[in-house]
Image: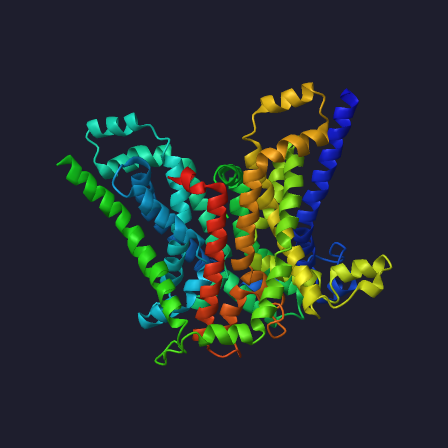
Length: 276
Length: 294
């Protein structure tokens, strides 16, 4: 019996290890080939770099394609999105979670219902609107679209997490003379930090990785996000796969680093409230 | 006095949400709906054409091609749910290092779909690693130009989407599993149930609701979020051969060389919206999630 249990454990570990390899291999493949020259790549795609490690692909990405400037654009868009979501989302979620007022459920459901509307449905009128008021090719066009796109889900997540906050705590704060903002700052933020933290990480990554919205709104070279530039670059350099690998890898790194640091929070959050 | 103060706080807290959603979601949807009955070009031309955009789209044959492509691409849903379920069952045993495996399985979700799309395009390129492996194991005749015809191209897209989504499925289903009380298992073990009986007779039936949610969420996701995969791998082409509704909206409005047919594009957008809302309503009916939310 004990041996069978042990055997089962080994079998499961082996299966999981194989799965892990399936998910890691493409990244490994990108890494080894981004460190080769083009001819080395075409001789053998599966070997480790045969000669000296070639850093030229990466230096080309940095000096010629100015990928760091693209990172800056993506970073600004993602950060502004997250800050906006937190400010607007926290107050709204607090009210939905802790205040009783007429029509609360109806309003809440109406807000949540807009979560399911895909961005393709709104993109054309938004483009026309933004070009009329001069917001095309500014970060704000993308940030405002993201705010509208992510807010409902963010409110769903935060409201669910603010609801268990104990009412007595809020009352005590009130008795101590806290006004509305102080209540949010001193009670809601610390007690609901799990949801807030998850929102920061999750929507930062979402905004960083998105292609569709910035591709439509940010067409100028100076404002493009890294994914928009990558999409354009990849089509142009199909003959230089090692350079492509370097570009793909570099663009994936920031989100991966955030994930590696905070993966526990992300997975815990996903297991409770199912985000997609 | 207190009441009025509360009202002010509630009102001011919700106001930004209303403004943002009204301007950047509701207004564009209403505009899309209205303009889908016109020959809008985004500028001044906007004449009422009735149902012509819809009729032309359905008649043109593009509609049927999109329908075919969507049905083929939807094959990814049962695949990702099933594999995700198996992975969740494996993780559920909590073998040594399971948290590490769980984190690894989720990794593709963190990488931009754009990057994954291009990666798979290279992997399945004519001289790419996949064909090299086929040749090496003596299956050289199968080493074809995968993006050369729409069926194999759609197959590669399905494969990449499944690879991308397994982690999400596994985590969500695992979340559902952790709600199953351990007493159920203990009872089953005492009754002499083996691993497979436990997995498929106890765990899976108790997960019906989670699986339902997973199926509909990934169905909606397939209808609305394939843009980066298609853009990277096929650009929806050749022609519209691998386009979906959401990709076609892009092609008809912003795609180079496809003209600027905002009228038709908004008509397709309305069709997509109706489809997504119908699926969502079904989901809410089935699962009665409205109750959990309020």
